Length: 314
Image (tube, rainbow, N blue to C red):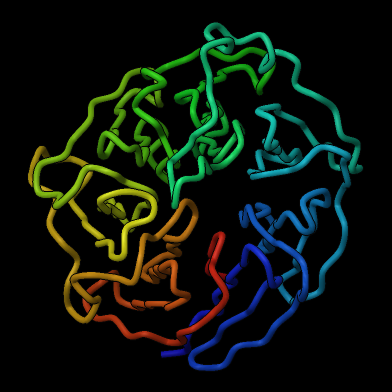
C-alpha cells in the first residue's frame, strides 16, 4: 500500500512533507500552524503568523491573503475561508483574497469573561494568548464552530455573521471538530474531558470514563470512531490516545496495536489527523505515528521533528 503524504507544521522551523520514512522540508525558518484542507484537494496553512498560504496537490505553494493581525487557525467553507486570530477575532477571506472582519464575533455574549490560558512554570506565569484555537464547519456548511482559549465554543448558523456561546468557558476547550459526513455530530477536546454534541454543537455532554486523566488536547474522527488525546496537563511528560464509537455511550479505551500506550508528551491541538482509513498522531517530541488501516496497526514513520503545531494527511 502506498504511504500517504503527511504535512507536519512546526512552531519554529517551517513545514515538512513526510512520505513513509522520507521527509522533505517545504518551508523553513518560519513558524507554520493551522493546517486545514482547502476543499479543492489542497491544503491551507498560516505561515509566519500573518500569511495564509495554499499548497496545491502537486506541492506548489501560493499566497492566498495576508493580514497585520496574528493569524492562528483556519477552515474552508465553500469558496471562502474563515480565519481565527490570536487576539480572538474572526476574519473571512474571499475567493479573490479579500480579508474582511466578521464583526459579529466581537459582540458575542459573554466575550468580556474570556481570559488567556496560563500556567506557573519555574516561577513564571506562561501560556498562550487569548485567541481562537480551532475552527470547524459541519459537512453541509450550515454551522461554523470556533473554540476560544479560554472562551468556550462559539457557534454560528449564518455564515459567521452572528455567534452564540454554547459551553461553559471554564471547560477550557482546546480543539473542536465536526464529523466529515454527519452534520449533527461534533466533538471537542477540553481540560474537563471529551465533549460530544449530537445537535451540531448547540449542546454538549462531557465524558471522562476510561481516561487516565481528563485533560484532552486534540480530537478527530476516524470513520465512526472518535479519537482523543489525553494527558495530566499541557506540560505532561507523557500522553495517550483513546477511542470510542460515536453512536454508543461507553468507556474510552486506549488505542493499541502498535501505538505506544504512552506517547512522548501531549498530542496538541491539530496533532491528530485522519483521511479515510489513514490516521496520523504527532506528539510533542516530534514522533509521527501512522496507521493506514483505521488504527488496526501502527508504525512510527519518523521521529525527532521540531515540535509540531498541526498535521494533515494529503
